Length: 220
Image (cartoon, rainbow, N blue to C red):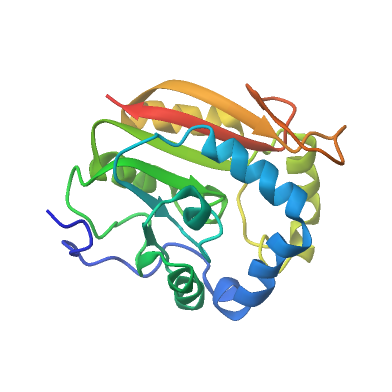
C-alpha cells in the first residue's frame, strides 16, 4: 500500500501552529545561525536511524532533519513549514500526530524531533506512531529534557519565546513511561548539548547531562 494515500481524516487541533505558520522563516533561520548545535542534534538522531526500510518524520517542520537523514515522507500541521519541507524534497502531508493519515503498519521507522513539547496530548500521538509502524518497527524521538540544565533554562524563559511560550517540557522518565504504556520497549538513549561544551559538540550514550535527548524504542 502506498503510505501517501490518506486513509483517515486528520484533526486540526493538535499543536499550537500559529507561531510556526507566522514565523516559519525565523524558525528555519535558527539552523543557519547555530550550525554546531544543529549538527550535534542531527548526528545524535542519525545514530538511531535504521540503515534501511521506509521511514516518516512526524512533525517534519521545514525538513531540516528529514532531508539530510534521507527520510522521504513527513507530516506537518503548519502549512508554511510544510511548503518549505517540500522545497527540500520531502513529500509532506498536512496532518497531525494524533491522527496520522496512514494505514496501519505503513513504515519501518518513525521519527519525532522536538515535537512532543508542542503536543496538547502526547499519549494519542505515541499510539498513532505505534499504529503506523510495522511489527518490530523503530520509533525515534528527540526532545529537550526538562530535567537538564538546558531544559531548566528553556522552562524559565519560555514566556519570552514566540515558539516555546506554550510548550510543555518533559523528563526522560515521563516519556519512557508513556512509551511503555503504548507498547514500546527495548529503549536506548543518546544525549548532546552538554553544559560544558561550547565547540566541537558531541553526542554520548545515556541521558542526564545533555539538554537534547534521543530515545530509540521498538514496537513489540
